[in-house]
Image (tube, rainbow, N blue to C red):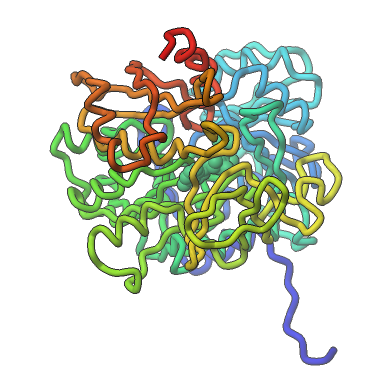
Length: 546
Ligand code: ADP
């Protein structure tokens, strides 16, 4: 056919090349492991990424070879993202919150040839190294010579210093163009069921995701923005922000390892952050800090919240008390991760109630991705905002097969990927997660939404965290049990919590017991571990004859 458009491969390196040329003075600000602040503009970032490619070549990294990172959000980690994938190798971000056994399993499974690690992870590396099966030849510490730790490693694994290697290398490297379907990054799901599984992103999927995320109805970052990903770069590429923010010419503020409310608030104000993204636990901690200290957020306009359901009370509190808009989002490792995003639109009404009802849902599918719900027999369900079903997605940044598996094996015959989430979708395509399918509570054959009950429990002023799990019941098979954690210095009266729920849900949804606990177990990705809670409370009702 004559007259077609150009066909250039979508390359990750084109993002920093563009940023260095057009947004060279935008900067990446990083708080180090020791609390110090480091600044580097995008011209320097691009040059150092080229220098790092020369280091990787000297270490023997080959195109398609896997290189692991064990690092917080910071400039060296961003250099690794671009250098590793830019030379055609695969950047394997490892979640340091996993156990040493799980880390060794995924490093061996990926056959990583080197591990680049922050100083904080020296004890972890000491525990993991003896479990490695021979693929790793070097551990490179992300520090200067003076900071090098004492870390004995098994024979065959060299301990190297990042800044020494960088100083000895040159920048004589031109970013190559190659097939956009080449693998670029690898991230393992945290394996809440079974062994962790690898999701392998391509250059194409990563660039398309970054472009989609930069859309005005999604994160929509601009050169004036100073964006702070609190979501870690080891958890689904910091929701793509290390790519999308740089592509947009927005500056990045990297918080490092200190993610408590006081540290986050002070960095946001000192570095004039306008946008940030993270899981609800981080924002709850920030809110508690702001309320207790009286500190304000001087420049933050928007916060994106996802990873687990965002309680409406949190959305409402940030807007009313701090003038900050909370944008709810849903995604998963298998979806790069963003799938749906919640942007307010005026046609849904401008009363506070209408706004909150809209914002509380997870959001609408991002252009480039499609979603639907099906029942257990595979029948497609209506988008009426009431019918709940198994959520499926498809699109150019959705996993087709897990790492090492047959192409298409993660999807059904029509190419739909089943997310493991249960959701409703309304006539606007606005999606609401009611549960993970494995967390659903089935009472007498009917489903009860744990998320809805948790959101209501959080309206009680003494409740800091809430989780609803299924407990065994002789008559109804399962009944909901509500576990609540009191705010510091507060006490909880279980009856008062139930009173908040009464009248807002059907009577048969009301939990059979409210248990006060001092702490909830969390997973490696910062979510409440329903698995461990269920194990703890499964027999609670039967044992007590409730
Ligand atoms: P992990 O399974 O290791 O936590 P993911 O980050 O891939 O890793 O988790 C994706 C899951 O997180 C989704 O399938 C969904 O259950 C949950 N999730 C993500 N965002 C939201 C949200 N906004 N509301 C409710 N659940 C969410």
